[in-house]
Length: 154
Image (cartoon, rainbow, N blue to C red; front, side, top):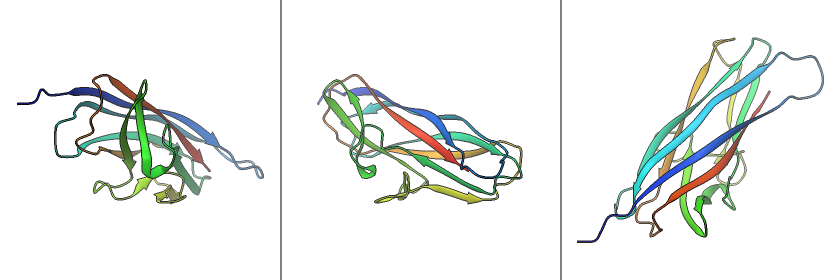
């Protein structure tokens, strides 16, 4: 029987905002974005799934909202990776529970989150972030991390 390789992994998400120039606009805010995978068993033959969330809020003047996620350490949205020294652990973040729609900026295979006139106004809106680590990645035991930037454009 092979020994289990348990690895702690997490993705750290930071927030940013873009305000389009022009007419005076009211504010949107973004916060509470996080996803932690916990302990990954490298010998498991099933994908390792988790769910995180982010919170945003806009007032009644902000009718066109787009939220994007960066590639982090990955070279493309389809190839996000957490790192520990020279080791890398592939994973991805999705907009849907079926983990078919990669959350990115809308380029390549990714899609941004876009909503017109988000409701309710002036209240927190919580969005789920669905994460998946593919199975059977032969990596060393350790802590693997990635930094994803969330950008809210309104």
